[in-house]
Image 1 (cartoon, helix red, strand yellow):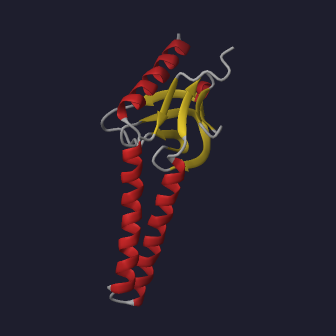
Image 2 (cartoon, helix red, strand yellow; image 1 turned 180 degrees about the vertical axis):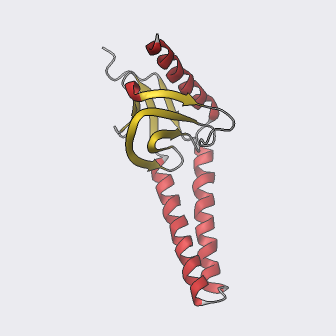
Image 3 (cartoon, rainbow, N blue to C red; image 1 turned 60 degrees about the vertical axis):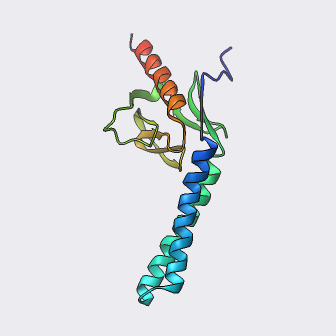
Length: 158
């Protein structure tokens, strides 16, 4: 009966999405221009062009990633493309603290076991037992989602 139910949604806000990807793309363009026009030597030119291309690639990845949204359902946190980010039974803690190593306007989930590396820039990342949620997302929906997850953890604990 709970199949397909969505309790909270977290999506990138359009303004933050444009500013985030625009900043990365702008950095890439500036580095490419500097590499072609002002580079003091061949080594620096290759370095600047390489970093510029990486920045443009990251902007493209962020634009694609932030087109999706995160959905919290009874089974856990999943992406709107169907990928399960963190199963509810695997989540053991939520950290929203000021000093937590977390994305902007987001939170960190700690899992029971390691999961494969995944990175959707601006929306979420997963490294080992940690899942970072947030980035170019608004703070209020992220806070609401984190509170629901904390409540479920507390209810599960007894």
